[in-house]
Image (cartoon, rainbow, N blue to C red; front, top):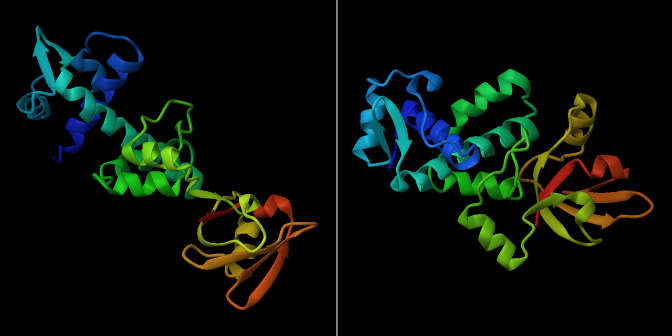
Length: 214
């Protein structure tokens, strides 16, 4: 099921108010959409919400969809800020735009790439998905820093996490690019890794900024 962006924003605000803040209902004015907005009819049509005496209530049927909506939003925040290094108001705005693209299945891939984060950048909990439960049951760490690898272990580069453009350029010049295969040759006294036919030595701080999929 695909809801409109407005409907998702209403459901998201309502879920947070009810599930995390303990409120029983919300005033439509606080959500920025008047009570006659078509998005409310869209949500009542799916029996996700109920509008009584001008106030909006979250129905039991809407709790799961609301949880999934807030999960997508907070995963999008993590992606924007942790991987793409887009922060502040711009990061929040882009996360709001991107969350609507994380349809069922895509959010699980993003979650796995981010190594199943439990909180958003603002410290709020990210509701776990099926992929999180499966990863924990299998003991699968998903994507980890290169420093978590053992000598001789091979993986696929997922992303570089650094705010330093010079570090980013240095690693990219070494061939540290998403999708490339990487093998850790040694981890002491420095980290030596192989990409293609070339080997490079880096310190621990730089190795921590290379995230690899096992």
